[in-house]
Amino acid sequence: MDLYLTQHVREPNGYTLDFYTKQGGYAALKKALGLTPDQVIDQVKQSGLRGRGGAGFPTGMKWQFVDKKSPKPKYICCNADESEPGTFKDHVLMERNPHLLFEGCLIGCYAIGSQTAYIYIRGEFWHVQEVLEAELAKARAAGFIGKNIFGTGFDCEIHIHRGAGAYEAGEETALIESLEGKRAQPRLKPPFPASHGLYGCPTAVNNVETLCNVPLIIEHGADWFAKIGPEKNGGPKLYCLSGHVQRPGVYETSMDVSLRDLIYDPKFGGGIRGGHQLKCVIPGGSSVPVLLPNEIDIPASFDGVQKAGSLLGSAGIIVMDETTCMVWAAQNLLHFYKHESCGKCTPCREGGDWLHRLLSKIESGQGQMKDIDLLLSIGNNILGKTLCAFGDAAATPVLSTIKTFRAEYEAHIREGRCTVPAPWRSSAPALAAH
Amino acid sequence: MDYGRGHHQSARAVPELGPAFVYTADNQAKLEEICARYPPEERKSAILAALYLAQKQQGYITQNAMAHVAAAIRCTPAEVEDVVSFYTMFYTRPVGKRVIQVCRTLSCALMGAERVTEEFSKVLGIGVGETDPAGDFTLVEVECLGACDRAPVVGVNDAWHECQSPDGVRALVEALRAKGDAAVTGCHLKVER
Image (cartoon, rainbow over all chains, first blue to last red; front, side):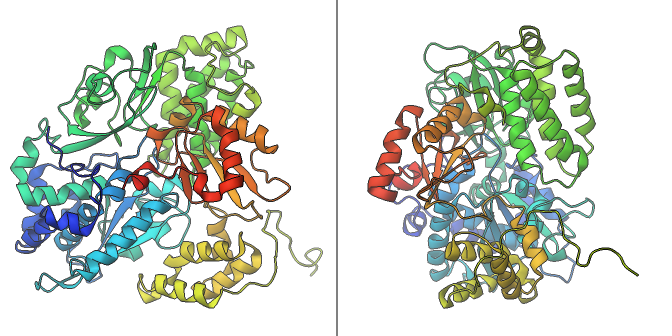
């Protein structure tokens, strides 16, 4: 497939305004400003673009829900808090194709009647923010951002907002709270951001990759976009490959591609690292269920992965070979979730920590058989009982690995030790368990 | 009526009072520039930026710094503390000149991050969360930095060092001591630009 999002990301100076405009950049914005806002939303709806942040919600619908009749200002908040373990695609887009993102923000603002977009970028992406700020200033000086863009009377500003280390800020209402200068904790919904978002105003929160697709839709047309990939899963897609794979990295292709090809094709992952076998794969960032080697002959699309019992999520594909202990992997992820839980909902705050302690106990050889049922019970008491999807995300690695690798848990308990030790792991169990 | 023994003392750990704190004129100007990005009645949106400025100026956040930030943002010190205690990138204790942040989450861990942490601990002679006596290095573990294709990744202050093998840790520490920031690979996307 031709590349659209990452075509020029390897070229020197491919990130500059100069380069971008020479490739026809900001023409889509000009074209969009010639349409009515409703026509822009219609095109995005027809294209079938689904949010690339994790939930796969149709972007056109999200924009249509924004309360245009409200007398309050409207906002676009671009979610650049990319923090899902195994996900690093927005990073590439922002660092190497920032103007595509700006153009998407501007078109989005025009569509929903907004004059301000905030790009909420995670604090650890400082070097990325420097590029964004510099290129933003250039685009502003060139008249693509600011007052009376292209002489159409459309005013629009884009600002960068730096986060400070909080996975939860990637949840849309927590992102809004953080933007308002508070702890990044989710809100009770409804009301949804479309009516009560940033500063109580109608707001659309969109992922970086989602907004980057918008100029392509305007430029090439909704039908063109919808025809890339399977039905209802249209458009170019970025996949992040990491873990025990030969060629980790970000790869752009259509959602026709199979999960197996993403891992094994020399164009993509190139197979498992030397001499090893695939044990399992997490296909959509750490929050989704694992798939086994016999479950990967599926389209790596939103619907395809869901049908196989997992989720495409953020398309962060974490590959694990046979040297990986699944109790250890679950313990590692639960350390992440207990650390990142915002603490608002009790099941997630207390349950995540409890799960981690039990997993540490089993991994260090101190587990009892009844701990497995306890893990399942705690997990099921978090699932669906929290304000945001974080709780489900925290329970999933435990529930999914017990379902798929129960024998491995039992072996740990029976033998009183980790039965899948690996040389690449810590030699001191205390360090791994802390 | 006697309700007890005078002022209530909270059991929570509060940052130290620290020396008197006011922004430099330069930082005050930077803050005003950032506040202009938000509606005038929403100055609190600039709180993270205000705290970054305070941390840059003083190295870490103290009670006096929080009180000054509160005045600058026009909110209460309690609201500032609420934020400081939530986000991981604010330090409420002095840290070393270089904060070594080893990513510990799954993709990096699969590539040996646990051993990278162990090596740093051995070479620097400090545990996770500690600072060496000279104040050169602080060692911490962080959760996913979003550079999983270059695992294990290590943050050195605001910069990244990619593909750090456990065996190469000693060489990196020596290079950091000798060459400073130049020893860090940086993000490949930035370097190749």
